[in-house]
Image (cartoon, rainbow, N blue to C red; front, side, top):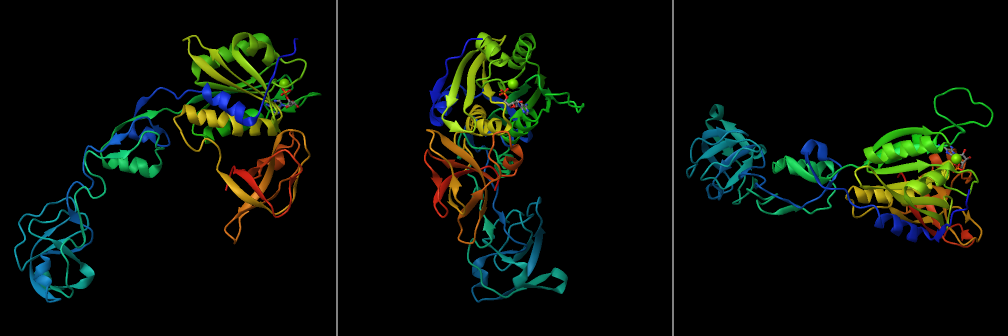
Length: 414
Ligand code: AMP
Ligand code: MG
C-alpha cells in the first residue's frame, strides 16, 4: 500500500482545519422539554411579562402604607386573596386585606406587611400591625423579572435547566435550537473482541468504542453504535456509508497511524476527502479528518482517531469534541476549561518538537488554586491511569515543568 502524504500540523492548525469543516447543524423547532442542553439558534423575545401582574412577595396583609405612618395600627380585615385568585373588592383607606405569596395585589393597596409583624384579632376580623410600611414594600411588580418584548436570551445560549425554566415562564413552548448531533462511533481492527468470548492468540478486548460512545454522550450528542468493523474493505465501506446516511458525523478508532496494513486508510482515502495528519502532540500524533458525501449529497465529517486508547481519548478531547460542540451550536467553551495550575510535582518530558499532554491529578487547595501532581503511567496503551486522571497538563516543547511552577491544564473532571 502506498505511503500516505501526511500533513504535519500543530494542534492549533489541526483544530482550525477541523472546525472550518464542521458546520453548525440546521436549526430545528423542538418542544421545550426536548430543548434542554441544546443551544438556542435564535434570540428569544418575551411574549409576556414575568411576573404577569403585581403580586405579594410574602404572606401578610395588603395595606395602604400611609395608614401605618404612626408605626402601628389596628385595621379591619375586609377580604382575603390567595395565589391563583383575585381580590373581590378594592382596598379602602384604613383597611387591610389578608394576602398570600403570589396573590395579585388588590386595587388600592400599595404595600404588604408580612404576617410575622402582625397579630390576628377577633377570629381574623381585624389585624394589629406593629410596624410602619413604605409604598411598594413586599410587592413584586409586573414584568420586574422579564418585560414583554425584551430579548431574554441571545442566540448561542445553552439551555441549562434554569434557562428552560425561564422559557417556560414566558410560554415559549416551541424553541428554535441547534439539534443534538447524531454521531456514529465505530472501532476497527481484526484483533478486537467485543462480545465477551475467550481471547484467541493476538486478540484483545475492544475498549475504545465503549469509551468514545460515552464521551460523545457526555458532550451532549446522540451516540450511535456502529460496532467493531473487521479490517475488511467491503465491510468498512458498507459501514461507513450506512453511518454517513444515518448520522451527522462519524468517529472511527484505529487504522490511522503509520501501520503497514491499514484498511481504514485505503477505504477512507477512496470514498472520502481526507486529510491525513501528523499532529505535533504526544500522545495522539496520527489523526485523520475529512468529509464523506452521503447519499443525500451531504458532506459528513469523519474523525479518524488513533487506536491506542489514550491517544484515542486525547484526540477526541482536543479535536473531535470541539467540532461536535460547534456542530451543536456551541460558540464558546469548545475546549475543556483551561486552568493555570500549580505543579506540586515535577512534570518531566524531553524535547521533541511536540506539545505533550500529560495526564495529571488535580484538586483545589486551601490557597484557592488548582494544584496538580503527575498521573500514573503515561504510555498511550495505559488507559487505566489516564481513566481516573482529572486533567491534561499542556507541556510545551522542552524539559517540562519543575515542582512549584505554573502549568496550563485542561480539566476533564473537577
Ligand atoms: P491502530 O491505530 O489500529 O494501529 O491500533 C493501535 C493500537 O491500538 C493497537 O495496539 C490496537 O490493538 C489498539 N486498538 C485499536 N483499536 C482499539 C480498540 N477499539 N480498543 C482497544 N484497543 C484498540
Ligand atoms: Mg488497527
